[in-house]
Image 1 (spheres, rainbow, N blue to C red):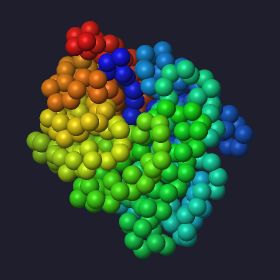
Image 2: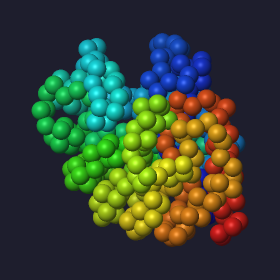
Image 3: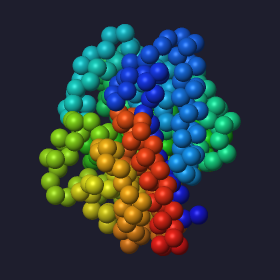
Image 4: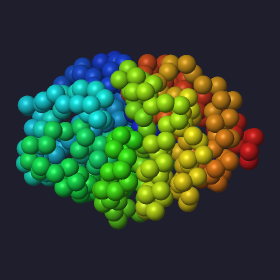
Length: 340
């Protein structure tokens, strides 16, 4: 099938699970009540994605407070009790982050519960997202390694352990989220991609990397306004990714200043074209989605193009997210009619 519809990762949390419209929400329950709420929210969003018509679904990251810290909570050597304020993404905004205080080691499985739950309740292809090594390094305070590359490789080894376990759980696509690739471009094309390769080593399932310009929060919106008429950050890392073993690249496209012809640098890769804007509550029309996919067809083979969101939808109102997912699927169907 041409233009399968999928999502970048996160979806809004219901108000009975966590605070709404926030990137770093507080949970509304504790203990087993919280665990049950996480399971219920995961099942809810699986159903809503299927109803919307998505072809590749995910857990919506309902069990994670934040896309990075949700993984770090299962890692020994990290101090969450004494968070410090740190500028992340090159000081684009401040956040309270945990500290790396010793050698890194997984405490056990990280996402077994939600991955197995999702696999048992959908027959569609299942994507599971993990934070990429470079982005993790950019979202913690280092008090142990003293070397970003060394710490990134240590995180990559842990990510690989969990990714292999997710594949054994029946996950079809393991995606690593690397928004830091659009901030530290030269490093990303070097040790960033090397760490990503280590995180994905040995996987037989589909591997993907998501690189965007961030969630639809004010700090990211303001940053985008400073980037000029053409956003060419992808130009530096795409050639390195084209040479890598990663099979899919998810990128921001609609309502951005990214020259769409840059996707030609991803020759041989599946391209997950961002056709849904997560920085606006305005719902795209199916025609707009199909038009964006049509522009991508000029630079990538049609059998390699997926319809996707620009980024995650965690801070977005739920009703808006649902309508945008419906527009995503309908637009992909319209593109199949036009270009199939």
